[in-house]
Amino acid sequence: MRIKKVQLTNFRNHADSSLEFSTGLNFITGANAQGKTSVLEALSYICLTRSFLQQSDSSVAKLGGDNFSVDATIETEKNVTNRVRVAYEANAGKKYFLDSNEVRKSSEVIGLFPIVVLAPGDFALTGGAPSERRVFLDIVLSQVSRSYLEELTEYRRALKQRNKILLDGKLNNILDGDLLAAWTSALIAHGTKIVSRRFSFVEEFSGIFSDAYRSLVESGETPWLKYEPSFALEGDIENDFRKSLNALSKIERSRGSTLAGPHRDDIGFFLNGIPIKEFASQGQHKTFLVALKVAESRYIKQKLGETPAMLLDDVMTELDLTRATKAIRTVTGLGQAFITATDMLSFDDKIVDMQDVKFHSVKEGSVVYEHA
Ligand SMILES: Nc1ncnc2c1ncn2[C@@H]1O[C@H](COP(=O)(O)OP(=O)(O)O)[C@@H](O)[C@H]1O
Ligand SMILES: [Mg+2]
Image 1 (spheres, rainbow, N blue to C red):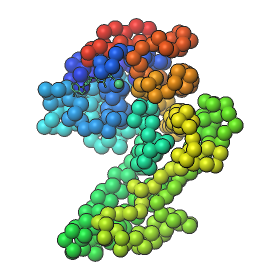
Image 2 (cartoon, protein in one colour):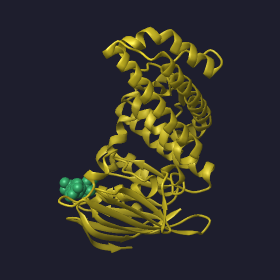
Image 3 (tube, rainbow, N blue to C red):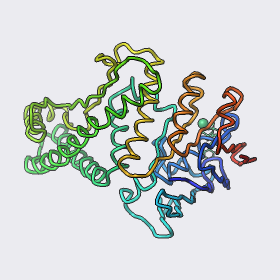
């Protein structure tokens, strides 16, 4: 997939910016707070229907206004050219258009134009809370499988309802047992599918990931990933999930929330059999993260036949020069890439000289020049 051009209208500090991209490497340069990340964020709206920064649509509209839009032209690997528009208005909400047709369900879009994002917030992925790793799983799986995304939406609905009933029971001392049982069944049905999909994903992804890791460090370390459910798994996911909820039922009622299920699962990251949380250096964490993103791209390509665009935000501030250079080289071998940077001086000439490179310089919410 290649994003040919994008136009941002009233998008953060961009009043009206147009960019035409190279099909290879695109550097978006400029000083701090000029609007570089916003360009990547706009691409995220086009490809994932929302910001990768997990922020509300209303915060994106240019200050003082109540609307924004992003228009893009994308060419797929099947050589189909699509025009995509995302338009937000405070009173009408957000609308997504594919070739002028409104698409109402985001699950119908997510996965058509896959992306892999590496942004400063991702550096919590390897060492931070389990929720970070669940987001990683869900974003990859949602892009490769519409049914996964739909299961996830149903699961979240059941979880919300079930938690509400449990909390009502706790606060008001009345609990509708039948209603709770109904939502528990829904939770188990959707949860089982999610856990099962995540298990097979981690199994399949682990090999792709080890290869990516070894290509980045050329060391003898053996990296490994393991899915870690929040309930004791002895054989059958559905039975064991149900058993665990039964066993937890008293504590769930006293706490007023659901204590087991895919919303509390984790993935363990290991190097030579030891959890990286326990011993890995900062550098190893960072290499692990870059390898996860490289593997994510390869996995998505394998599943969809469409090469994801890579969005690298501010990697220079998080990675040292050697790692950043290696990461950029590896990433550009994968397909189209968008990389923000405050200056190009630190990159070695080979990167700047690469074929198919374009520079887009951003200043105060405008594109001041573009050149190849
Ligand atoms: N809704 C908004 N309206 C106007 N300006 C915004 C909005 N949201 C953020 N900004 C501003 O936009 C500027 C650009 O942000 P960003 O793209 O993150 O910059 P960069 O990545 O170049 O450091 C910042 O100065 C920020 O304060
Ligand atoms: Mg930025």
